Amino acid sequence: MLKRKQKFALWGLLFISPWIVGFLWFQLYPLLLSFYYSLTDSGAVRMGKFVGIDNYVKIFTRDRDFWPSMRVTFIYALMAVPAKLIVAFLVALAMNRNSRVMNLYRTVYYLPSILGASVTISILWRFLFMREGVVNRVLGFFGIPAVDWLGNPDVAIYTISLLVVWQFGSSMVLFLAGLKQIPGELYDAAAVDGAGRLRTLFNVTLPLITPIIFFNLVMQTIGALQEFTAAFIITNGGPLKSTYLIGLKIYDEAFQDMDMGYASALSWVLFVVILLITLLIFRTAKSWVHYEDGGRA
Amino acid sequence: MRSHGGRKWRWKTAARHLALIAVGLIMIYPLIWLFFGSFKTNADLFGSMGLWPKTFVWDSYIKGWRSTGQFTYATFFANTFLLVIPTVIFTVVSSVIVGYGFARFEFPLKNFLFVLMISTLMLPQTVVLIPRYLIFRDLGWLNSYWPFIVPAIFACFPFFIFMMVQFFRGLPRELDESAEIDGCSPPRILFNILLPLSVPAMVSAVIFQFIWTWNDFFNQLVFINSVKKYTVSLALRMGIDSTGGDTEWNQLLAMSILSILPLVVLFFAAQRYFVEGVATTGIKG
Image 1: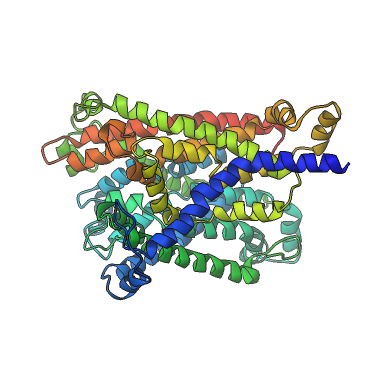
Image 2: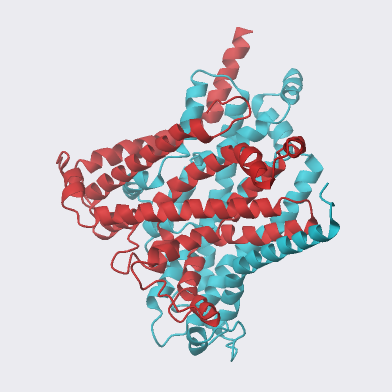
C-alpha cells in the first residue's frame, strides 16, 4: 500500500514537473534577477556594476517623470476598473432574464472584450476620438460642443480609460453566471418580507455577487496598473506626457534607452505597489466579500 | 408573479430592451464604422460622420496587403500563425498534464506548490520582462518565436492550469480508480479516459489562449525586431508610423479589419460549439 502511495507521489511530481521547471526558469529566477539588476547600472550589453540603492534613490528624488507617471497610472486604474465593473454589473442585471434575445445581446456585448486588447482597436480609437472624429460629430449633432479627446492633456487619459469600459463584456458574463446561481427562493423570501427592488438589490443580490466583484477587482486592477498597448498606440504617452503610464516609462527606459538596471528598479517599484494594493484589497475583503460557506475570506 | 398588471410589465420590458439595444449599438458601432472606413477616402474619413462612404475605394485591401513592398501581409499573417499556433498547442498540452498532476495525485508540498502556482497568476509580468529579455537574448532567441513557445511548453500560464484542475476535479474519481484496477498507468488514464471527457475545457483553453496570444502586442514588440519576423500587430503599428499625409489611411484600416477577422470567426464558430458542449456533456461553467 505504501509502495502504491509513493509510486503515485512520483507520478504526480512527474506530471507537474513542466510547471516546476517553468516556474523556476521564467518566474522565480527572472524575479530575483530583476531585483539584482535593479541594484546595478546595467546597460543593454553588459551586466553593470553594483550601485546599491542608487537607482531607487533616483526614482524617488530625481526622476521628473516618475511621480506624474504613477499619478496618471492610478487615475487610469481608478477610472477604468470601477467604471467597467459598474457598467458590467448593471448590464448583467438588466440581462438576467431567460430569453433567446438575451443570448444575442450577450454575443454583441462580448465581442469588444475579444478584440479590445488588439492594436486594431487602439487604431480605431484614434480615429473615433480625433478632433474631427465620429464621436465629436455625434456630439455636435446633439448640440454638444466638441471635445479634444486625445489632444487635451486633462482629457486624454479618460479617453483611453473608455476603451477599457467598452470591454465590459467579459466581466458581464461572469456577473451573469453569478446572478443565475442565486436561488429564486431568496428573492421570494425577500418579497414576502416586503423588501422593495432596491433593498433586494442591496441586501440579496449584491452580497451574493461580491466574490465575483472581488475576483474581478483584483485581476483587473493588477492588469490596469501595467497597461501598455492602448496608451502606446493611441497617444504614445502624450500630450505632455499626460498618458505616460508607468508601463510606458519602464518600456522606454529598458528598450529605448537600454537602461536595464534603472528599468528593473522601476519595475520592482511597480511590483511592490501592485503587491500592496492587492494586499489592501484582500484585507478589506473581510468586511465586504460574502462567502456562502461561512466567511473564509 | 411578474405578470401582475400586464400593461405596466410590457412597458418595462420594452424599456429594458430599448436600453439593451442602445448599449448594443454603442458596442458594435465602432466596429461597423471601421469596416466602412476601410472603403473611404482620406477626405471622407476625416470629414464626415456618415457610415456609408461617399465614394467607395475598392483597392484599399489589395494595396494595404502589399504593405511596404518588401514584405506583404502574407508574411505577417504567416508569422502570426507560426507564433500563435505552437504557443496555443503547447499551452493546452502542458496545462492538461500539470493540471492532471495537481488534481489527482498526492505528493509532498502539494498544497504549497499549488498556492505558489495560483499566486503567479497575480505576478505582474512587467517585473519579469526585462530579465526574460536578457535570458532569451543570451540564448539567441530574440527575433524568433521561441520566447513565446518555450514558456508555453513549460506551463507558464497558471490560468489554464487552474482551469484544467477545476475541470478534472469535477470528473468522478471512480473513472480513474476502475481504470487503475484494470491495469491502466496514470498516463493512459489521462489520455484514454479523462482527455475524451475534457474536450470542452480544452476547447475553451484553445480559444482564450489563441485570442490572448493573437492580440498580445507588448511581448511581440519587445522580442521581435526585424520586419521579416513581424506579426500582424507589429505590422499595423509600423503602418501607423509610416502612414503620412499623402498615403491613404483606408489601407491601414483594411488591414486592421483583416487582423481581427480570425478572432471574429473563431468567436462566432466557438459560440455554437460552447452551447453544444454544455448541452451534450451537461457540464456547466
